[in-house]
Length: 143
Image (cartoon, rainbow, N blue to C red; front, top):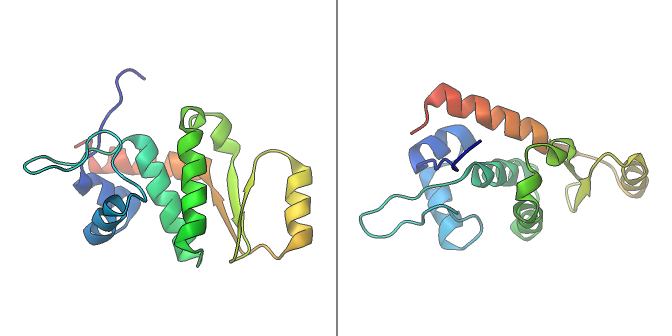
């Protein structure tokens, strides 16, 4: 894909669907910081595509009532596996019962284990988030 493309806050807000205050707060507390260029006086933040995936995943988990502490673990998992985001992570799903977040891949045994231990309330498909993010970037322009 060549050089990594950076995305400014305006596009990030449109693509992810969060407020500027939330984006700024998450960067300030170190939850999800812009990995390409942090804001300094007179400069603009630049977020990578992986940052956008982490932001959208965090937003989805937050909307399902998951605590910020547990969301942080999920986001850290994504960051650790970012080089795999294009293909292997397209099969990754985070499942939650409203209290815990479980990481699942293609292993059906893990799915059965999770379903046996608790009631599933929410699923976050990382591949779907990735595809949706690419589409939103194209819709809103690459600025």
